[in-house]
Structures are given as structure tokens and as C-alpha cells.
Length: 62
Image 1 (cartoon, rainbow, N blue to C red):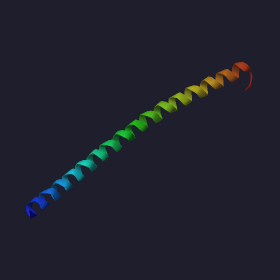
Image 2 (image 1 turned 180 degrees about the vertical axis):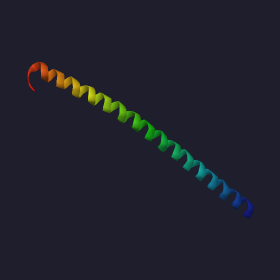
Image 3 (image 1 turned 90 degrees about the vertical axis):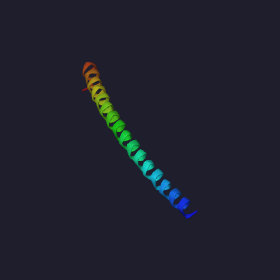
């Protein structure tokens, strides 16, 4: 019976370690996606600012 308890304890530790590894993988993936999104949004905002500036110039608003 004691052997089974030790075995279950070791299995729990192993499962916990795997869960932490998966959590780390998930965090890394999310950070990568955030960086991709950040770059994409910066490009979009830069383009929008240029377009707004061009529109204002044509309207003589500047």
C-alpha cells in the first residue's frame, strides 16, 4: 500500500512538471502572438497617419 502511495505521489509530481512545461509553452506562444500583433498594429497606425495627413493636405486643413 505504501509503495502505491509513493508511486501515485511520483506520478502527481510528473504530471505537475508536465503541466508547468505546457504552461511555459503557452506563455511563450502568447508572447509571440502579441509581438506579431503589435508589429502589425504599428504598421497599420503608421499607414493611417500618413493617409490622414495626405487627406488633410488635400483639404487644406493643415
